[in-house]
Length: 271
Image (cartoon, rainbow, N blue to C red; front, side, top):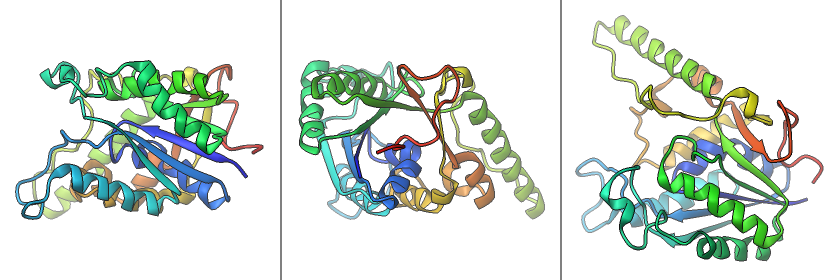
């Protein structure tokens, strides 16, 4: 069996982007290691959600460990950087943020874990970080460099099928509208990225399509563990189960040197 190290920017990113392949790998006997660059300090939380005296960072770390258990993770590590916020915000330039970190320094921290674990596979993000978030872009840069330092040859960029994302957002919005109409109320505003965001990559750039429909229950449970950020009314949890399975039952990746087109259906194949 082999070791999968999956590298993410913030708590909750892991279940959204790679929850299916993580649970699948664990169920198949592989070791799964989760590395998170930040503790998601700038996440938004509703008033009164946190317990008296509890800070968001503490809650998000606890949520990460709870989600990791659901996904079969054997080890969780945080690289120690702070959340940079959305692109263009003043927080991007705050000392200590992941966005301001030296790529080589951050890569050395990750490479140390890769070497300790004798990692066979590493997942990062695509070069736009999926949707342009600075910490996600930095995951791509740092992950690529760490793989070079550690000699981890098998690297997959977690991304999304751009056309599928728009299709599933439309389906979720239609389901919300239908349910609201049946109750005679106004349809809720569906959560999702603005149209101008360049989310994911075109199908022709993708090289791996992993069917994780057998693991969507675990994936959704892991999302639910991140309650401070993913509410029951969110895009992720409010859609009906069949719509969720359709939207999140496939995870997409780009492997350098592979393709053109889909050439893999299992990132742990042969290990």
